[in-house]
Image (cartoon, rainbow, N blue to C red; front, side, top):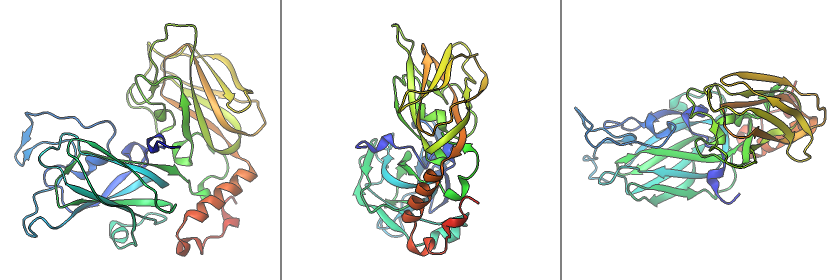
Length: 345
């Protein structure tokens, strides 16, 4: 995959990301870094502290003559191998930081902010020049390591609208036993292709939780031909599928009329052509008993789905593969005390 933005976003609040500490946020809170959607700007909006920006903005550094650094620490929504980052300075023109750097660390469980700050940090992006009012994109090419927390540092101060972190999610195998949602982003599933995403991204289909609004789903343009739209999803691993959930919630006049689900590799039907209702959570049993690694969802002829859930169980081989990959990406001092024989008890 050459374009790192094709990997899932792993720091977004919609996937469970959170800003847990920051050096300063006098003008605008660091939480804005990870909210969904692009930054917006109202040229007339001012508060008692100055211009209102949709992003994170720190005060001007005076005590160290502008030679210091401001930072924000983010807990990722899911552990991931980071493939690239976008430091977006949208609408920050005379107040953007001229440089930024990014580090990562790996901490299992639920460490406190103090424990995260005291951790050993791995450089992911060295101090690098930024442009103002620009989506500054940087591929990450360091040695592969599973990252749970990031630290964005800006030199010396200023504003960043959004931080987009893209990576390969490698889920903790201790939580992948039994029956799970095989198509969940947080379990390592990802979108591999789609016919159209004019109104909204297919990545929303496999995001956590229920959709909040219509744009928090996948919606295609209206087709004017005899074809149909489709999306493909690589599952968390090879698995036996028990049932699927096709959710058209929020789509009232623009839900697809019908849906079909197949094994993307073999074309075998998991769910035959089936009628859908608008604004409805549909659940269908799956009779197919062969292991599946990637599914294709065809909608007829077009329209929108809010969520896709593919419920089932990983094969024994897939469990072993996931466990081996996860352990290999941990820092040695963390991996040494973990017994893989206990993962799927």
